Image (cartoon, rainbow, N blue to C red; front, side, top):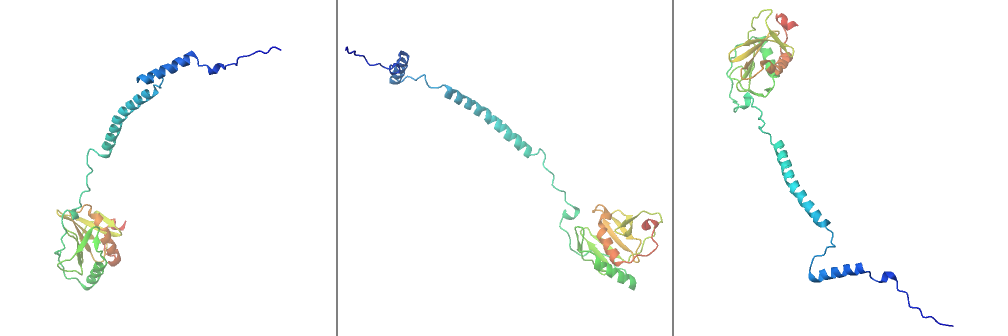
Length: 229
């Protein structure tokens, strides 16, 4: 029997192709000569360029936003501070307030002492001050002094005169150049409150005094029809 000698088959994938060999040679040559290779992706360069442009755009935008925010937080005109009230424009005097103290009959004297005992320590923000005379029938508050006098003559007013009812007490207002003088018209013993022009809205200062009058001075007298509404 004849024996045939066969040569071993060489796999086709084991033989480098001409194109592959050429590419490897070219890369080897470039590496040996120090020349840059062309097979590195170019995306890195494009990415860096895009990031640089994004940074250049973002910086002025950030500065503009910060400036706008600062402008919003800093108003063009400053907010005005609250205006001071007449009593806070200067230090308040604690000296006794000069007041007259006419002699009172027994009954009005009792009523006035009861009134003074019911008066508050302050009228709104005005602190009570001592008086030069008649502490049993007079009181004073603040600087300039708002005063309360008990046992004064009741004024004669027309039946149709303007009167004001504050917390159940009827008052008649006499407007003067330096103050508004308010006197009760519906009480057994008349009470006068003098409000200096420095204090706006004189009727607003009557509330605590009216409460003391209701608590201590009985109603009575022939009051105008406006007081009986």
